View 1: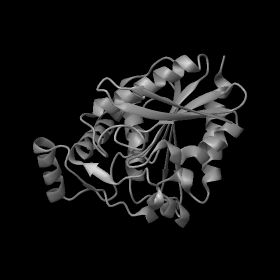
View 2: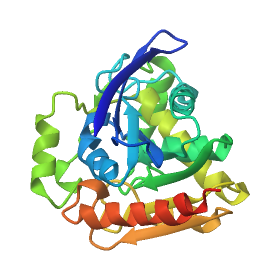
View 3: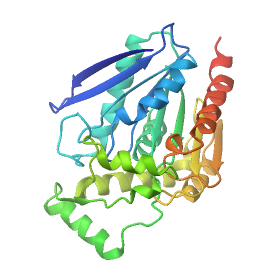
View 4: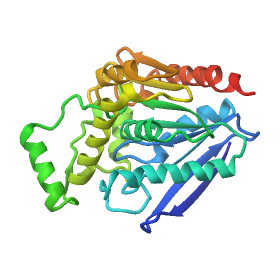
Length: 284
């Protein structure tokens, strides 16, 4: 496995930091990983190690306001800035790995972003998408008063932020995952009023327009049925309405981070089997 780091400057002059893990031989495919709220791409190194052993590369970047990338923690001026960042990363990968199938892989908030991206744009070089535990609806959404205050602060002081108060035990049934999350200096819990509002609007868009969307490539959606952060019922609802080659996989007893669950190997094996069947075996 070969690793590399890269960065680029956005149109609004933020520096975004990325990392890639590539097999020694020419990769069969490249996964562009979009991480979730508060975390960073480095938390997916073990996932990348799995895929590189299968001949698949993984590349991702720290979203603005996250990890080693620039920007106020947990803040985004507008949702489309995040979409533009994903688009730029895909363009870089398309140029660097010409002729290699490229797939988007979004988790949690990243799943929200990837769903919005592929519902709006389907570039010809993008061959598929994997969505895990997407933030389409929260299991415990903010109450009426908190939502009102967030909407108000979004107008008068959008950079205002508070701790999201994530209980790390809901991430995985493996207690070590939560402990490492808390000790990770690149992880943060700050949620700004603007980010909450924009991601919620993005989720509402997916739910509202799912039935009017047809994908030109295969899509895999997965969710743990014991997820206490994002709703697996919302994922089921959206998957049932989407048009095209959409596969839904629900995991009994699994929590939010499927790739960090005790049975993560079974999850990754399932994804690899899907990639092999739907993408690699269809080449040519």
